[in-house]
Length: 561
Image (tube, rainbow, N blue to C red):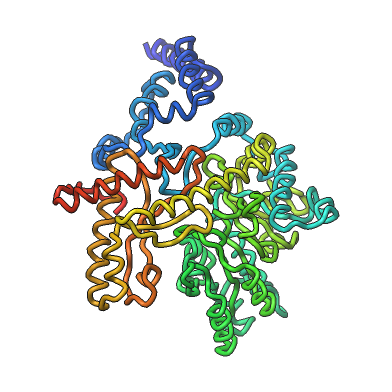
């Protein structure tokens, strides 16, 4: 009997293996193939229609309800569903409760529509499954990455032909690399800056080898600091923690009324640390397209200070970098060619799928400061890209960007940039025409902030006492917070919100915060008529608020507050 049971078990296992290989290599049957073809045809050739029909902007289903559907923590031993059923379930149960970031009415975040062909390119990258950590797992894609990096490097630094001929495929130098996103790119830049700042001295082998305590002792200091714009991205604070200098040593430099770093205060702070004598300014980070307000720091002036003081200068251009492709507005980023390193996100205004970042260095030897090797993969003397990247395994995002540049050209990208900037200016004019709204930050690129605050109230605040200003702003903070939540939950359109200092809204105001609505205009299908619809809806919500008809919906823990 035992032999019979064993034979049956062995037969079942063989059949399971055969089934597994079938699932691994091809559709299970013609029915499954038909389901896949049906759904993928929609995605590949009718992407925007598919999103409009199947995905809500911000579907009005509470996070609590969705969370309650996802509480099963047991991984099944045996298959539960056929592929066709799983794909159908994704379309029927998950997609309707995702967010249609491609909607022209979704104007609140830096995640928006992608060209339909990006899905094709992403599928090809997934199918090839190349790993650009090493030539043995990527070959052509590693070579292509260096070429694409050089193309983008060229729009930033504009070196001559001889420079790019020397470095485009140089196995000993690196103009930059692709990363998972802007956070990783910023971290890479500051990692390089730290290692350069705390390099070998005498018998000391450098901070990368011996750590911060030994580095501080060898360099005769007590700490390192990074000076950043007050409007910098929060990822820079993460960098302070990860690099060991402490996030409290990522020190904000005040901004002016245009939300740009105050160059005079930067110079004063650097001079103060020099006089104090025990603090080293490891780097300065300027921003080319602030996350909240879309402003660009004065890169030329900041660069002059950093060159004079011998300080590494990084530009976080995750958002604004592609503006360099605009034939009309590239000059907004004047001076970026002077900085030591630049972050640009591919999944922002290069319109690539999530997620893709890039880091570029003016000096092709900069990444030598963070090179690592291993005998089994990136051996010394090898030309593998992974020897100089924070990440190990990386997908071949270079293929997507290379293809997109060939399809659209830099002019095509520039036209998208122009549309966003000009639409933001038109939107600002529309806001100022309406008595119900206050334009808070005027757009420099394609981001602006505003709030519900009637003109009559704005006039009153100009001469009001500090106590009255605080009282009024607290009231309108609640109004705008509630309005943004209700518009989001209604699911027709979406703007985000942030908090700015009262001084930004009304110069001379007392200390305090102001809740503002934030619009990011990068979707080419968004028009001024769409934006008028969004403002109309906000006015209706405010009218209901005034009538006492506003209903605040409870928020489940974890939902945006």
